[in-house]
Amino acid sequence: MTETPGCSLIAPLYQRYGADIVPVPIDHDGLIVERLPDCRHSVAVVTPARQFPLGAIMPASRRQALLDWACETDTYVFEVDFDSDFRYEGSPQPALQAMDRKGRFIYAGSFAMTIGPGLRIGYLVLPPELVERAIEATVLLDYAYPCQGQGVPWLEQAVLTDFIESGGYDKHLRRLRRAYLERRDHLASTLKQHFGYLDLLGMTSGTHVIWRMPNRLPNALECESRARAAGVAVYTLKFKTIAGAESLPGWDRHLLLGFASLKVPAIAAATNRLARSLQL
Image (tube, rainbow, N blue to C red):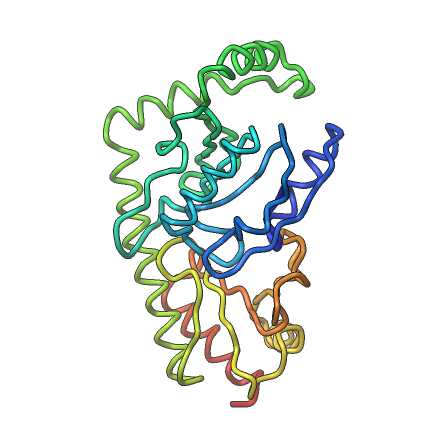
């Protein structure tokens, strides 16, 4: 089972190993647990800490419902922690895996967003019964299978370990959070100056927000086209990293706006060009 809309990379990965994909709809609290099928001995892939792409944080009641469903159906839940390192408001929810007493949850994280995707280092927190199989898979990676000669990046892991233990990684995260928070706030304020009331999703964490546009503006596809003609990159939910956009009601009124890679002056300039492109 996969969230829909969700990350476009997940379903093809599982399909390569022969899995049948069952899309499950989301709302603005994340995966709709009541819409999960009665599929026993399967895997559900979820992003509860920050749903991709809408940025929803799954509330405690729904997390408990998901845990109950996993136990009832004898199913594993693969919890992908996406972007939650950059949280700007409130206290983080505990990981689903921390609530698990039945060995149903697998937690996955990486350093792709905090350091860079080129590092190629991630990690898993596994139920005890899966640990031995994970070790066996790691041994295969050590012998460069199936990575075509790359193997596990042991040197990078050693350097990263030193970086974490020295406290450097925590300082790095704090510095990024401050910078991204300033950029997020500036994006929101400049958009409000040009467009008035804003309906922004995913503001509490992450590196992008979703703008639910008012009906007085063109639809998302038209806005994307006009913005790109003005030299501004905005994205609809049909972006290549997103699958199943059409399953979300009103998907064509949503625009994805990234801010992490832009400094404040660039955000201001881009927002001005966006406003002009929409003739406001």
